[in-house]
Image (cartoon, rainbow, N blue to C red; front, side, top):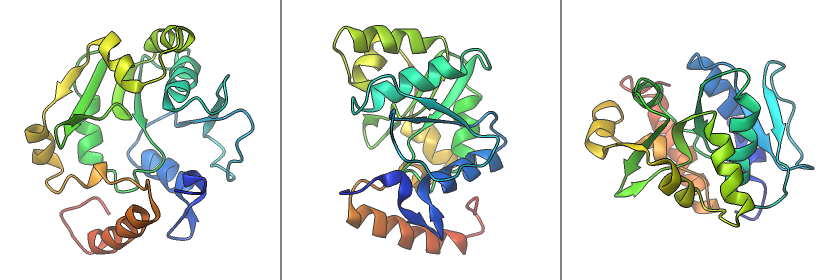
Length: 192
């Protein structure tokens, strides 16, 4: 992306603020943010928890470690979403959180989506042990936890256009997400 995705402007607020507000609007509590040790964050809503990663710049596995471990005293399970998925739909969140299991992972376009999933918070220890052993890939984490996989067919039943999986990894995908958001706001079948 060339800049911090969490600080991208999304309808007048940083993308991270949009995501926190979105998750709050879905009734998820507590909402927590995993951040690098010295990462600059926008001013978050007061009820938002912030867990700082122990290691800087080690990828999303570090965020899983800090987020799941930090939430463990407060919750048995956590819904995990990357900060760059601004079109996330409540219908998909509801589908995932209502599945039974310690690791619930959707499949989209033939790929598992470990950063849009539900995990038992006790799995923070598994992620930490893997990272300490030199495994930093969320896919390696999935191999270790043997997730329940939610098929694309089931996902399309609640999110037909699969907009929940739109992310902002490049300037082009960010611009496309903004355009798509404008269209979605006028669609009464979507949660905007």
